[in-house]
Each structure stands twice: as structure tokens, then as C-alpha cells.
Length: 166
Length: 428
Image (cartoon, rainbow over all chains, first blue to last red; front, side, top):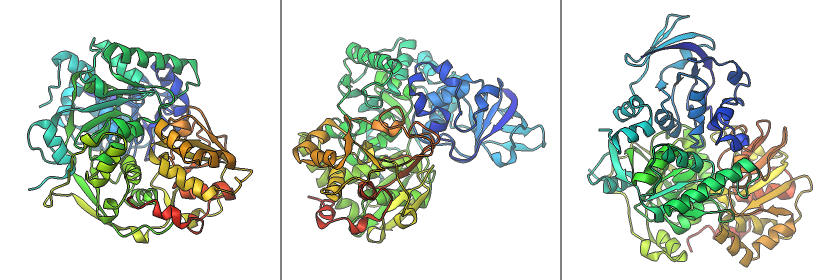
């Protein structure tokens, strides 16, 4: 699958508190409303300006902190097609796959804010249309590819009635 | 080749021997959700018509993050949780009972168990030698309904601690030191195994503090062997029969061994806005503090309140610093009442709130104003954590917080700590 969009660059250690702040705890059962505030405390303009298909690009340890699955869910609801980072915090990584949001580990130092990117999920490549750089990303573990291809964990369980990951 | 604690426990639940790096399907003994993650978990199960609990007696739905509820939207979330508990027979821990991780340790978790929880600090349970890890709502929802999950068996970092803490230095300083040393992503996907004479001599309260913060280094679990201290803790809570001794094999394979001499540690303070932004208390000296918060799954236990009370007893709280105290559980609250600790704290000038997460999550009970500084015993100081991205959170031990509440600014607690306090850290 080929994904194209604009890069929204963030730094290291983007916590789930920055993605889905605790002060908006009361919106957790109203995800479309919560999505209007996604990443607000990291970049107040992001939620207003992000376009369907765009990419969130982080540095090290993206998604650290709270286990709130609302964080990857509202990134996806905002129209983001994938999150790219040098590394991800464990719970966020697993949650993102569970909600069907691709998370790709690659050298994001070579991506600048606003760059046009083309991501090929099968080939494992990110093409930077501005600089011409081609970045490789590590393939997901097999279990996660299965869950992602089924459309997330809920769809996976609905399909098989159980885990079918080996 | 021998096994680490993580390999041992996961193997027992997978029905076969598994090593680090392998994927295992495992039975889950205990599942937890809280009011920030439970409603989503419940809605996920409703979506696929799987609204059931495979093991209702060890499925615990907590209402602790916004308890009592400060808003109607959250009151409605609480209704969703209560209805699910009623429908499935799952256990409900409602307003006033306390923080999920404390109650799970007091009443549900056994050595050798696998616990999955929709809360990142679920790793606290590793202090009882249960493989305990945080996951998202959907993972835990499926765990609740099917009684199983999948895990990648983590590689383990052995954290070997020797020597005795100096007066005024605690388990909190040890774990902040470690996180500062290896970084907020220094142990991503790994298990930490705490061992060595210092850990063997450490009481359960301090062990829970260590395991609790494993996730702040990115770890999947923070484990400690089950021993006589574990047995004593379970006995205190009427659960001696749940005890089982477990230790790692001598020839277990570790990805890394980190040795720490506890006698060389000093009080540590984490500066905003990441936990690994640690400095010695000397470097934090003189920082004026608007709010102090004692509590949470990290340091809201009887021992923590006692250390605090022993330092502030007979003194006056600084007029420019407000103090919020939240016991981690109803049992902690009752024990602190019995020992006169609550009276000491209220006399001193504390606002003592109902057991729960208090202001830690930024929902209520102590949201910071613009530019305000909070010194806290909690585990996380991210921007916006306490409800305002314009606030600043510093993390430290209960003793460091106690001294700051008297002086109105951060100072070295070592010269204020009496001998009674340092004794309370040893195994009874």
C-alpha cells in the first residue's frame, strides 16, 4: 500500500500526555471531540491544519507514558496515515497496531517539517519527495502484521474468535 | 541455559519453555482497568458482542483516576464501568477504595501470576514477582473476555544493588538515579530484574516503588524475586496461602547487568519535563515550590506518609506552599489514621484527600496554575501531566518533599531525617 502526505515533525519524547492531555480526560468517551485537540500541547496548530493522509514524524521514544489507547486512536481519527519515529515507547507501539495505525521505525533526522513523503508499507521504504532521500524502515513483527492487516486487534478477534498470530 | 524471572513466569503460562525474543500466547491471571481506560475497553467488547469476563474474580475494574467524579461526562463513564461489573460479575473497586496498583498488590496478585492492566504503571505488581505489564484498552479488553493475551518475551536487564542506603536516601532516589543513568527509553521493551543484598533487605513498600517506575525507563516489567519479604507482605493482608517462592536461575541469561552501590547514592530530583532529567538534590537547592503532592502508586503508602510525618511533626508548613496528601488505598488511610499520621499531617497544614490517584493525572484535586511549580512523589513529570502545560513538575522522595514543605523550597533532606526514619527502611 502506498501512502502519501506531508510530514509534521515533532521532537523526542512526545508523551501520550502531549497527544491526549489529562486535562481533557472527560472527552475520552467522545473521541471525535478529543481528536480536535490531538497533539495540542506539542503544537497548537497541528489539529487545525493536519490533512487526511499526512504523517506524524517523531524522534526518539515517541508515545512514552500513559497506556491510553486514545492517543493513537485520535492520531488516526485526525486523518494521519502513519507515525514515523526513530523509536517508539512499547505500549504506544502496540496500541497503534491494535487500532490500525501503522507505526514505522526509521531515521527521521532526514525528514523536515513539511516534506512530502511517500511510504510503501510492503517494500518498507519512505521516499522524501523534496530531498529524494529513500529511508528504509524495519518490518513489523509477524504477529503485528497479521493484526494490522486484519484492521486492528478487535477485527482480528472478531474474524478468528481468538488470537491467530503464529 | 537457565531462565530469568520473566522467562520463567511466561513459560509457565505458555505451556512450553520460551526464551527472550519469542512470541508466546499466555493465560492471564489478573486483569485491571481504570476509569480512564475501562470505558473504552468495555465499548470495544460491546462492539464485537463479547461482553464477558473469563475470570470475573480476578478481573478488577477500578474507579480511581477521577474519583469522586469532577464532571458529568466522567460520572457517566463511571456508570458504564459499574454496569459492566454488574453484568459480568467482575470486581469493582469504586470511589474511596484507592489506586489500582496498590489494591492489586494488597488483595489480588500472587507471585508467579501474569497481570495485564490498562494503565502503564501496572508494572508495580512486579514487586510481588508477578509478570505485570501495562497495555491499552483493547488488549486488556480481549484479556478480560478470553483470559489470554500474546507477549513477546522480553530480554532482561539485571539491576544488582549492593550496600545500605545513607540516611535520607530511599528506593525512590535509587530508581530516579537508574532512570537518569539509562534514560527514559533506556530499557524499552526490556524487563528489569532488581536483585542484590539491598533489594533482599528492602521492604515491600520500597520494592513497589522500584517496580512502579520501571516503565519510566521504557521497560515492560520490573521484577523482584519472591522471598520471605513477599511472604510477610501477603500475610499482613491475610493472603499467606498465595505465597510461592520464585527466583531466577543462577545461569539465566541477561542482556545487560547494571551494578549500583546504594551507599553512594544521594537524594535525586527529576526536573521538568522528563523523568530522566535527573539532578542531585544539591543542584535543585533553593527552587521555590508552590504545591507539594504526596501520594500515588509510587509513594502513597503508609511508610511514605510516615517518613513525611516524622520530618514535619511539630513544624509549620511554609505559608507559600500548599500540601496535598492522598493515601494510596483505604487500608493505607486507615493505618495512617490509627498511627496518628493523618492528624500530624492535617495539623501541619495538609489537605488530605480520598484514596485514589489524586492530582497525578491532571483531572482534578490540584491542577497547577500557569508557571507554578509542584514537587511531588509521583512518577511522571511530563508537560501537562498535572492538567496545565504551563506548570512545572519536579519528582522526589517523600523525605525531600517533606523538607520542602517546611522550607518552601527544595533542600537536602539528609540533615532533617532522624534515625527512626532510616530504621523504618530496613526489613522488619
